[in-house]
Image (cartoon, rainbow, N blue to C red; front, side, top):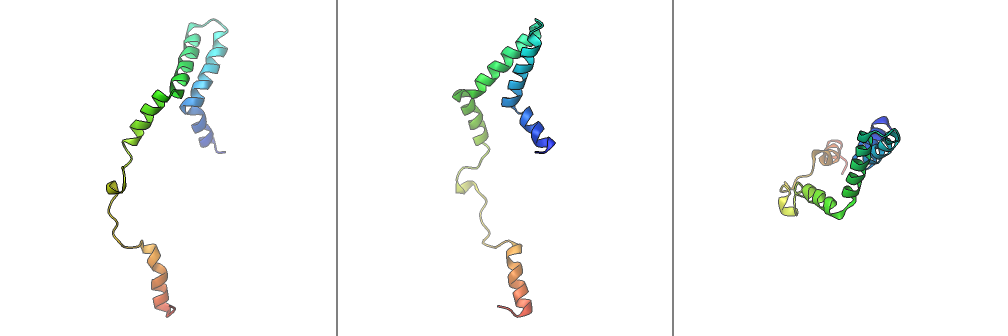
Length: 97
């Protein structure tokens, strides 16, 4: 696993919030108010992200960007990509059919 993939995994919301909760718990042993706030805040965010209401809202916001149905897609030109015609051109040059 590359360093970028590891950092991406650790810094995305579910894992990041759990790590913040653990960090806040470790710091809260000293009686720091900010550490307790970190624990409570990250735990509440994890719970909110796990609810169907919030996940539904996030999903709807992503679905607005996706084209809906074949009518939203660009029209086909009816031509094959140029890489597909290369074997036919080579066969025509060499006399192979």
